[in-house]
Image (tube, rainbow, N blue to C red; front, side, top):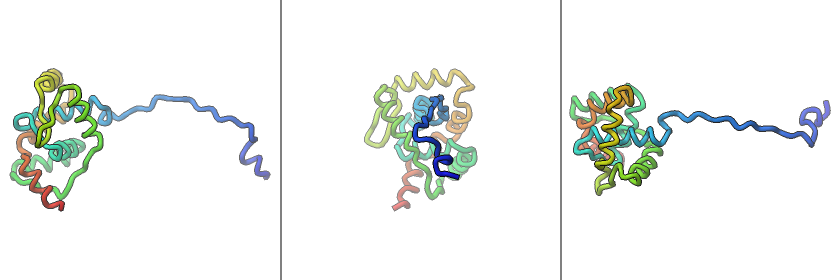
Length: 156
């Protein structure tokens, strides 16, 4: 068999058809912003550190992780060795801040009045963010900054 038979002629053209590629909901910017606003809404005083937001975001991805945080709230002690950091979180935080939904503070982020109105509007529909909402209502205020910082101190 000749090499030309395997490769084809030098004048062959490839034709590409552009098709829409689906984006997972958790990778959509508005989804991540709303998820972060929920985390802040169910946090003490509507505030949270970046590290704690990453923890809550990581935990929200599976029921097993959320259960681990429920146990941590009951024991008042977080025993995770580490958790994942999602690069979409800081991007969503920047957009949320630019839109006036949140404000950056010296210790993290705080829900602004516009963000509070936005999330209350979202909460009017019980079918939206149902799983995240239920989990955050249980653990949101129970996972304290002190618990998160205690684990993070052991990282160094």
